[in-house]
Image 1: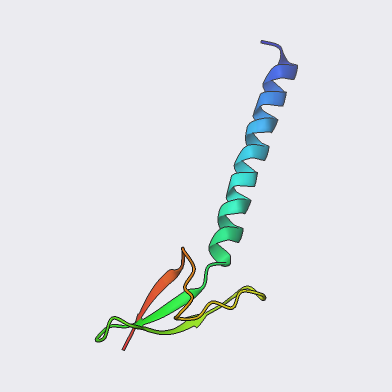
Image 2: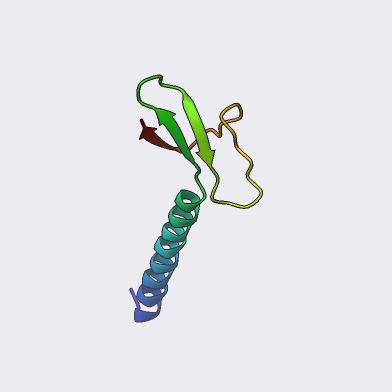
Length: 70
């Protein structure tokens, strides 16, 4: 295998890994926090971190961070 193909392969792997890392960070940062009462097991409030997302306790997203509160 020539040095050109090796360099191209390593570069493509680096770009792929960086892209996957970027996607994971941006997806995780956009998930809202859902505060749930420990005693009643009910939603107290939803903290939206991305402007434009207006999730509420009545309209929860499919993925979110579950935060236990008193």
